[in-house]
Amino acid sequence: MKDRVIDPGIALAGRRREVELLAEAFRARASRLITGAAGIGKTRLVEETLTGSGEPFVFIKRPARLHDLLVTLAEQLECRSPRFPQLCDATSLHLKPLVLNMLRASPRCVILDEVETIEPRMYRFLQELYYIPGACLVVTARSRTHIGHLAKLMWDPREEMLLEPLANPESRRLFADACRFFGLEWLNLEDFRERAIRAARGNPGQIVGMCRLAAQPEYHSGKHIKFAPLRIDLLAGFLQ
Image 1 (cartoon, rainbow, N blue to C red):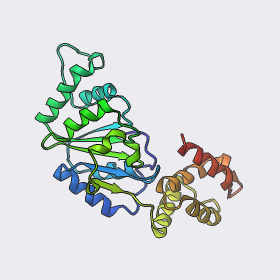
Image 2 (image 1 turned 90 degrees about the vertical axis):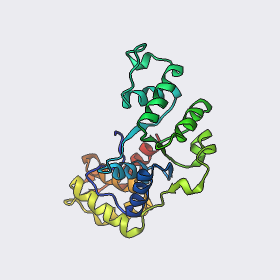
Image 3 (image 1 turned 90 degrees about the horizontal axis):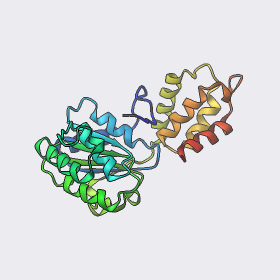
Image 4 (image 1 turned 120 degrees about the vertical axis):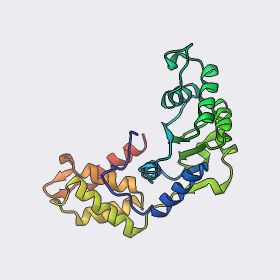
C-alpha cells in the first residue's frame, strides 16, 4: 500500500473506536463507506484495521476506469486466462466474469481507496460484487458526493463511517509522536506546536505533514521553524 499520508511508524491517534467498528465489519463481511476530509486518516484507518486481522482482501488505490480496476483485481486475485496470459491484454468483457467467479469461489474484502467518481460501467460491476455472499466492499472517499453512481448502492447511512477531526488532546499527542519520529526535539517547538495544531484543526494528516516538512533544513532559521512557507507548501501538496 503506497502513498501514505501518515507514516506507519507514528501511532494512530484517536481512532480506537473506529478501528473496532471497522474490524467488526471486516469479520462480518459488511460493506462500509469511510468518508472524511483529505488527511483525516481514512487510508490509515483501513491499514491499521487490516494489520493482523487475517481477513483476506484486495486493495485498489484511486480506481479510475473499469478496465484498470478489473486488471488490478484479476492480478491480485491471481486469476488465470489461457486466452490472455497477460491479463492487461484482456478485454473488460473477458475479465469481468473471471474476477466475479474468483470472488464467488473465494470471497474477500475489496477495498477501493480514495475514490473520486464511479462511472456507470464501474458501478454496474461493483453492484454485482456487492451482492456476492461473503464478499464486502469498503470504499474511502471525501464524501458521498465524491463516489458518483456508487451512492445509489451505498445509500444506507448505517454503512457510512464519517471520520471527525481529532480532539485537541489527541492532536497534541500526535504532534508529540510526530516530533519524536522526525527528530525535531532540538528545534524551538513551543510556537510551532501551537500554530500547527491551531492550523490543522484536528486533521492528523496535516499535523504529521507539517512535522515532516519541519525536519527539512529549508524551513529552519537557527532553531526556529519558518511556519508560513511551511504551511503554504503543505497546503499546496494537499490540493494536488
